[in-house]
Image (cartoon, rainbow, N blue to C red; front, side):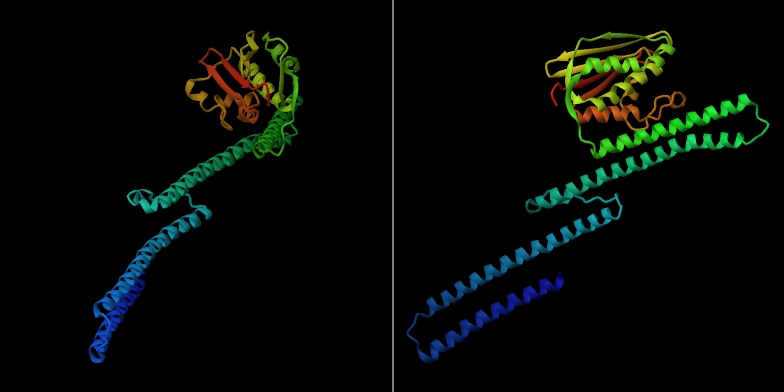
Length: 349
């Protein structure tokens, strides 16, 4: 860039020399041949031309200077984008240095956009790594159990009761793996939106009654009583996906509700939609944990959840389906006072 500036200055000096030479030459010719033309007017015209050329050259120099800076700025952005494309999310462009220059407001905005993109990509990369780690852990745990009990079954001295117990554990862990795989596939399909929503009008109250009846073996085994408070309600939604929502929420309520307690299910009509309320009498959820329960693989009591067959994906699936229906889900709970899930859905979709 320094060589270019020197070259520009050299051209300006040469131009001045040419203009001065023309004026001197014209003055000499004027005196020798006694030309009847006003020398001062001609000189003024020549100087005017020189001034115009000078202004033109200065303008070129200013534009050149700004373009030169822009080249440097864009080169910095391109270098940052190259680093990002190679997986380096530690890139940061100082946008503050463009604040005092009104001509660089676009560069400032561009720098801020790049920094925002890097931050989002960094968060996504952390989520991806956590997801892979959690999936690996969830798969490894049942596989280790299956492998260990399969080795024990090779012992010929085991009693029939022991063999039956070990086979039961292998079967339980296999179901756990199958459920994990099924949930991961569901989440993947919901994330990619490969399955189009099959919106139709159907009886929501009937759907809830049928799902509660289908879960009868679980709640009868714990002597749980269901208290239902709703009349016939019609809604426009994907019936199959909404079944996943109610099954997951009701299953959780049954799992964490103690023996001989009650679960309340109600539907309230609101001006802009409906609220489905599912309230249990379980162990409750702390205020801090309420912020995390819809995250993938998050489990409040990991040891107990695994004993109950959970993998921390159920509520993530519920949240995703509700979001796809442009609805909202929230939880109200206190420790040892149960949990209330409120699902708000628009009547029209």
